[in-house]
Image 1 (cartoon, rainbow, N blue to C red):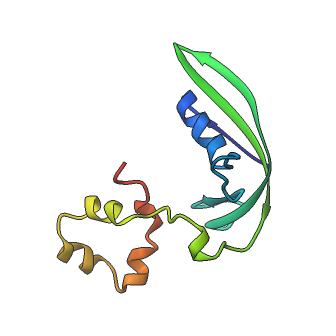
Image 2: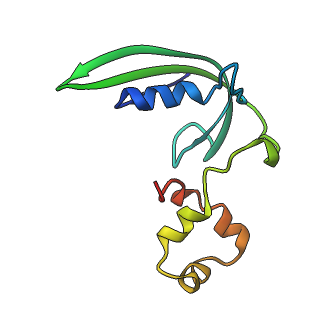
Length: 121
């Protein structure tokens, strides 16, 4: 079971949207990136269930607690997965292409620097 929370209703809607709808189907597989703990650094899990277990209003803000049951699966084929790291993330993280190229020994290393995922917003 993976238990987590989000701070806004918009984020709660985005969590549910990861599982898709009739109009926009999605693979019910999450990539969970961790730095330490019981899960591998990159854990792919089939979402068997997702429950919004608690909604709290605190100081005019909403906090939603989710509980999900995941089962580990193999990494989806590259064509079926949206990469969490974009070139925009790399561009905003380095002042120049030369600086970015100097930071990595190979393009593979650069393309899998998940620590920069989402840096562009």
